[in-house]
Length: 200
Image (cartoon, rainbow, N blue to C red; front, side, top):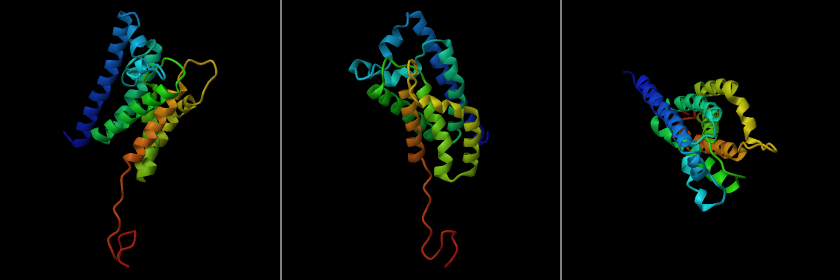
């Protein structure tokens, strides 16, 4: 099997497995009378709610909430994995943790859901090409922006809404941070050559 095909297969299994875990947790939470949400969601500025940074993205309030996060997470996570498992791990890890910690510090109420991770992966995939100066990645970013760009409105506060714009905003920051940290560094030209590698 070609390396890209093997990576694609592993990525589909990995991201698909994460989505399956989210649905399994949703079913378990329903059987337990919503106790997982009450005990493992992010409770801002409360030590007892800090573990929600780890668990909240696995928890959802209803089938609609879960379904709306499942498909973009599957698509964006799969695309991110095509660049390699290590880069995927950094991108999703920073999106997950920065979203959670930002929500814990600045959030307004109990927060659950994977939308912060979705926002992080989206911003990671849309800006990495500009850091890397990779036209293929930039083209992919344009396609993703056309498909999912409207979600960026979710980083803005909406009065009377129970949607956590903080999770979205800090998830997006996590994705930007991942793109910056994972940017491909260019080697300096050898002495006596110009920036195109030609002799002086």
